[in-house]
Length: 486
Image (cartoon, rainbow, N blue to C red; front, side, top):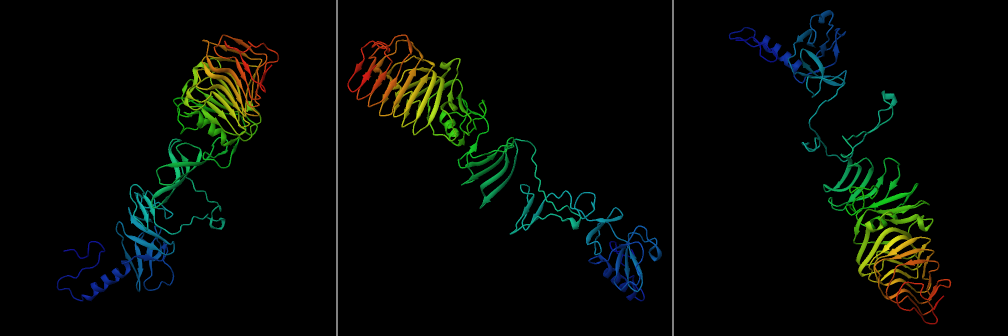
């Protein structure tokens, strides 16, 4: 039978042992020294004038009465007794204000990491940490709090006075964000979300998200996709539209992954910015578009040519806008735009180009295809093709319809090519209600069928003395006073 206990080495009472109080008192003294172990410090030299109950960890360079007792617990009880620690014993060092553990024959600062202490009171490689709540694999750090504070370590505490909170993600396509929830449903998110621009997003239900603010990583400019403060351009801008694009894209690159799919989306994007004297182009890729667009009034547009809807200059027939229930392009309320290099058609309703209420459309290198109403319709607005060329490859009610006071159509010094003998069921040019069409110095090649012109109700067609057969058609024109043709 052993004479001591296996863990603390407490003396055991042998059978028939005399003076049993001696080992009992010795065991109690050792228990008193070891239970809830706490020491006044770690020393190599015995302190002067110790008091009953004082305990220390003996340092590795023990001297004097402690010589040869390195790493043991020194407990003063009328004299020094030395207790040998076992693997894993924990002890509070009051002088250093830290917890130490006995491992591999040494006392080290406690750490939960592998291999024992790490020094400085660090806790390393903790797999889960919950504060007021239980952490799990999804949220390995979980804190349930009513308030939290991060404060800089100040210079008088050996700090710098600064505090920088750093977060990092693996690659550009990953997400690094702060997600704000209500009842554990996402409502707002900010950060680098899927790319490296800084985004602010909001949601009403945690499913459908709206991008409210994007800060461009290369320029620092703030973009407001939902409107609000306008982006002021510092250079010309191109919005790309492709049949294989998406209106969820930003339109800023000629690729399926970045281009818009509809023309109206690109026009709406232009309406959100301040041109700031620069030019904006809506560039259409080759293909057929089944919807055109209503051109918005813009901010900061200096001149008509500074807002352009453009197709393929070398092959305008490769870009086709063909609508069934609306005009291809409409301007109103002062909007101004230039349309270039494409073919326009309407099959049920609508005009190819329509300018109303003080707005302006300029065009060039357009192929006018079959149209349900008029190729060019000005109703209180202005349409012009000055010093350019275009072609007519399909019939319509009118090639030019100009009506209402203030309406004006100007095609002068143009080369107009007619292909396939298009038919105009009302007239090639129909002007009424104090409107004006100025059509001088054009050259028309090819033939058309229908009435050449109708000028009525104060409408005026000005050709600067061209003959009555100047305009295309195979039937005489009609001028009814107070309308006229000159």
